[in-house]
Amino acid sequence: MNSRSTESQRIVTSSRGTDDTVWDCVIPYVQDGRDRGAVSLVCKRWYAIDALTRKHVTMALCYTATPLQLSRRFPQLESLKLKGKPRAAMFNLIGEDWGGYATPWVKEVIRSFGRVKALHFRRMIVSDRDLELLATSAAGRVLEVLKLDRCSGFSTDGLLHIGRLCRNLKTLFMEESVIAERDGEWLHQLASTNIVLENLNFYMTDLKKVRAEDIELLARRCTSLTSLKISDCDISKLVGVFQAAASLEEFAGGSVSEHFEHIGEGISTEQLEKYSSVLFLPKLSRLGLTYLGTAELPIIYPIASKLKKLDLLYAMLDTDGHCQLLRRCPNLDVLEARDVIGDRGLEVVAEFCKSMRRLRIERGADEQELEDVEGVVSQRGLTALAQGCLQLEYLAVYVSDITNAALECLGTFSKNLCDFRLVLLDREAVIRDLPLDNGVRSLLRGCHKLKRFALYLRLGGLTDIGLGYIGQHSPKVRWMLLGYVGESDEGLLEFSRGCPSLQKLEMRGCSFSGRTLAQAALQLTSLRYLWVQGYRGNGNGEELLAMVRPNWNIELIPATQHIDFDPVRQQLSIVEDPAHVLAYYSLAGQRGVGVEYQLFNTLIEHIPIPGEDF
Image (cartoon, rainbow, N blue to C red; front, side, top):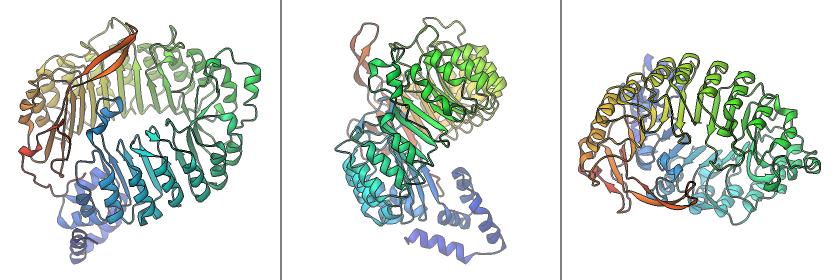
């Protein structure tokens, strides 16, 4: 036990009384990190008890503290979640070389966290050596959950060590990670040595050398397997898997056609007969099939009424196909689809899926052949959704048109909404009901449970008055993304006088001055993280120095260029990406980065904050 842990133990044991007994009974029920952080600031004894009893920590940015600082503060951790690159990296806005390396954290877990059962790395660079060290250590023998969530830097060689040695692993999660594939031996080893796996996920990866025989072996040996999400594999090859996986509740990633050009109305009866032996087990209630066309819908119909979650993001359904399927899913509470679902599809959801809690509508490809006149989402679909699905808690949607009235309708009916995200696409030349000031105000007033809020519009979509409304009516919002909102610095300043709970703010396309950004950051009293792409300044970041304070790191990421396809000109073109500003609280001091990232945290004195909740 390290010196900090020993000191915490001494404080706890030397000052026990009646109140301590009460606290010992209460502490197991205090799980929220924010509540724990508040409790730890009451006195030294409660600080010490929190240090010894904290079982889980989430670090929203892995540079907010060092691995050593974390192990000294919470020596008894059993679960750790770390986020590396900023969220903008998912949209290729931040380079791979920015940072977010898992190596120092893996070494500290092995050295200090002997009880860790769950590790979750998100948007981090994990090497094969990291996975080998973890698997061959004592920590690897007790590890039950390993999540490599949108990570990169490793290959199937590293996974081979995990599959061979981490025999108590119950969850292996690698969805949307970039994995260098050598062979499929890692899966064979996992299937041969593990009998307790419950969740295997390598969905949306490029792992193509996995063998259906190994997946079936895994299903037969791991009788508790409840969730299986794989890379592209025709489900006709998985008949044995579905027969063996008696406990399976979730499946995603299997495709229903090997020949992309045959999808659609041209499917023959003979091709459908290929799937006649595929029988989904009764417990299956969460499903996602890729390349699913309208002609193959009969494969799903037998279990449609039992489905609670449906992932259609990578299906090849047109608007009518969505409607045909969704009419048969009355118990659906989670749906993910592309905007080709259209307003008519959302009206079907509103009529038949009354239990809907989470709905995500992503943008479809502009040139996608399946999109027709109906394949867009607008105020019509959102209005129907708000009036028909009163239990909605999460709504993320790309719309081609929107009105104030539709947002007001959401504010009137969607009282359980905790997370709302809306992106206004640029497909329509004219949006007739801009600005959306009154609609946004009504939405925020009505949805009083909102904790996460994203609004990505276009120029003229929201005035300074509307931006002020967001600040005034977002008392509980902790994360916010704003795109192309406001008109001037005055709007941002008015916004920053509100939002008392806002911890994380991301902005794009809002041409505020650097000096006003700095002033706003100081006025947002709870702000811990700020990311901005594009601002008015001289390029060297001097105007940002106004926000300098103890433990506040400021990074300037320079403008870059990338090549993209221009659908109008039908040719490749060079696109300019404006400079980024990244600012965040950190107890770790200056991080080591390349010369291309300009750092300002060397200008301030490093003053550790007692009781800091990472």
